[in-house]
Image: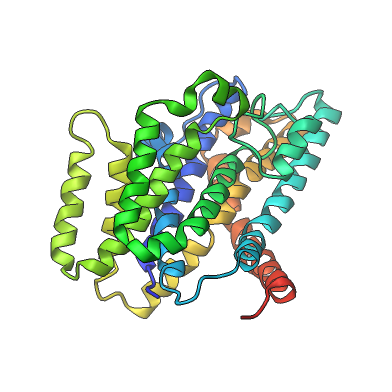
Length: 349
């Protein structure tokens, strides 16, 4: 099984981009004046930081292809599920409950919820069971960014169902799966009124295409040994994604492929360890940055100093606190919970 050190760096950069993007949009959502500190340096992140989210799905496709399509024996559904729960659920529940408490305090002491306001019983259960992003919600609630995790889990299980077919037919079936999702997307089939009234599959279709493009990268790496040729192709794809209208899917595919191929360079051990360290913080940053923002906002409201949010120092505190909490979370909570759940529930084969 291959290790993708530079992809770990890419994951960290994408999570950081999302955190910066949401710093900017949070003020808009709360109907406060614009706050884009360091815009001269971070303009592209304030405007397009949300484009980092689709990159995650391509990376996930690559990683899942690397892990599960390299196995001789297919993993059981039980073990597959436990591994997903062990990795994703502990931090999700911790951040959700923390934000739940914070929002209660906002309501009690300041008379309203802040940032994401649909924090009722219905959205409580939608958050707990990761059922966001499917059209069931009425608006943004609790730890809103987690809606993409809900989509990703569904794609994981689709991939699990298709593992045997993919192993049997290799990249041909991956191309066919991608093409099927492309047809569904272009024909707007899932937007037919009776379907969209039941469930919103628009995001799922879009993210599934990205995920299986990542699986396709896995096959490309195994089929073509010429790094220079692949690197040239990826650069051409990257450039082409900006010609005419911006082609987001092509951009995501090419940027992940470029970072994978950079791995072929002779990275020293210290650099590899650094990239792994940064990559480990990705999920934590993604789930914790909303909590960090709300915690900072609550503290400033207590001291009647919300204007401090418009200072450069507040922005730096937001980022540094998010990174520090992510480090603590991964090393002191996520790793331990992951190990405990796996040891208790995984069936050895």
